[in-house]
Length: 116
Image 1 (cartoon, rainbow, N blue to C red):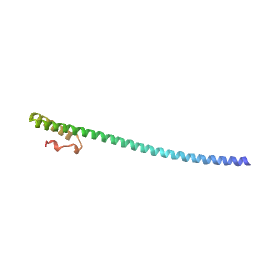
Image 2 (tube, rainbow, N blue to C red):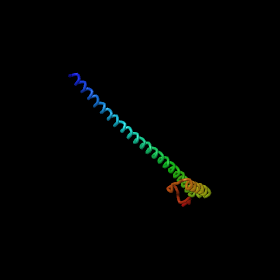
Image 3 (cartoon, rainbow, N blue to C red):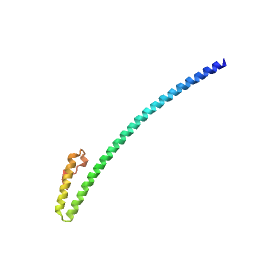
Image 4 (cartoon, one colour):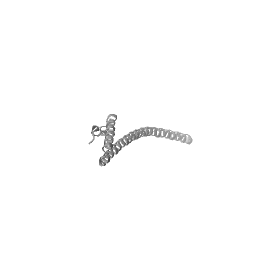
């Protein structure tokens, strides 16, 4: 009789442990789903930030090119070399017009290609 009772207790304990294990596994699966969703969200955020950084880099390069030409124009005018100043002004005008037609960003436009 004692061994039968111990056997029943052992079986009950095993059933209880099996239920607990199933519940733990369910929780683990739910956590894995949540982690996958968070990971996907992080990947999307990283891609967005990467694209934004690339766009900022391109805008910065365009701005630097414009500034380089502006300083060349100013230097040529300072040296009374109006032929060079005119060449650089034309190059700047072309660069500005090219940016206006190829860019969707209104921030990238500078006085519609007009020199100040």
